[in-house]
Length: 169
Image (cartoon, rainbow, N blue to C red; front, side):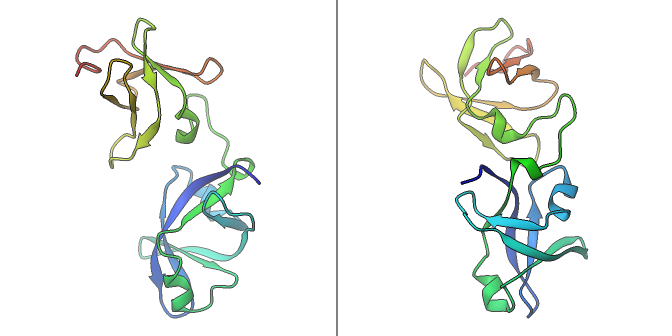
């Protein structure tokens, strides 16, 4: 089975012919709009063939093979659209896939471990890194240029800037 990464969510059906309204969950829309096949969920084993994807009145509409009516489209509401890593748009220096940050150790500005990043919380603003503190409780730190000093995927660490109050309870 391939490693699949979420790039969009199906919000609802559109029209009578099985079109799906999507909410993109990627900053690289060309990844989504250029896909020839998609997977429904991260556990999917068989891809669906994309017939068409287009922008319509501010919404991305997706038409896939085998979903030909409103009932079929309604049944897919809430499903996540996923793609294999090799189909994701390559990132520039200093850009990261959020899923690559889960599991890294969060360090304060002096290199002292705060705890592992267990999940990413989407807030509508910058994503928030969250995980348990060794002494109990939980940290929640915005993943933004003003709070993150360095991400080292090879070492498996994220180092924070020296910002008083950033990680205090």
